[in-house]
Structures are given as C-alpha cells and as structure tokens.
Length: 145
Image 1: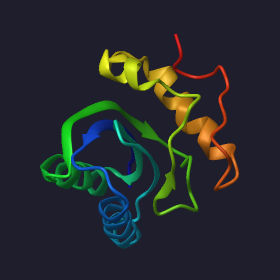
Image 2 (image 1 turned 90 degrees about the vertical axis):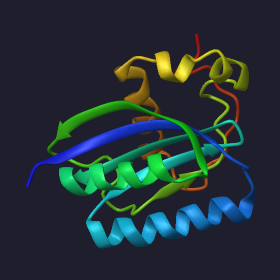
Image 3 (image 1 turned 180 degrees about the horizontal axis):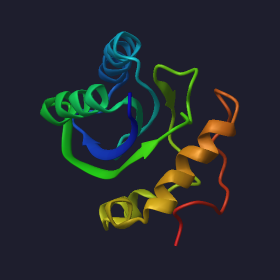
C-alpha cells in the first residue's frame, strides 16, 4: 500500500490548552485507527503538522483538518511518497513552541508558506531525533533566515 508524508500549516483559532488537548486526543484516536503517524508543532500563531501513512487515510485526515473550524488558513506545503516513516512510534507526537523555528514575525510575513520543501522536512527530521519533552531553547537553526 503506497505511503505518503504530508506537511501542512494552519493558524489556530482560539489557541488554548483545552482546545489543543481535544485536537490531540481526537487526532491520536483517528490516527491509531487509520495507521497514521506524525507530529504536530503548536504555537499560538501556527500549527505545523506532518502526517504519514497510507495515502488514502492521510488524504482523508487532511480533508477533515481543512474543514475543522479550529484551523484557519490551512495550507498544504509538502506531499510526497515515502517508504519509511519519520515518526513510526507516534500516533501524534505533539511539541510545544519551537524557538529554533520561525519567529512569530516570520510566520506573519509568510515564511512558513514560502519555505522550501527541504527546510520544512528538516524541521520534522530534527524533531524526530529529539527526546520527547526536550526543551525549546533558542538555537540558530532550521527555517531562520
């Protein structure tokens, strides 16, 4: 069965802990059911998510997300076929704000939507090797111009 990786960005509508916990709970349940893995980076100004798994299931999840009123300005940024998952053990790894990513001002200027496929994948490749719950200290890194 063909697998894909899909990365999208959106803006949270009413970013709050309860809403985020609801999103994560539902995502983990649906992803486990559908054989999808991935990661969600969440800040008050952006959701950046990587989904990976069976093509039809990932596409269906993306359609649900795009229709969810807790997400604004949903943009598909990367979609590619894969043979190996980046987050094989995570129905949905969640991660807090990342200071080594784009600043809020960068996001407002469209840096994420304009980022290269390589830079977007590098964000998740870096996250995949970090231990869960690792601190988000400042570091000149991916996506910073």
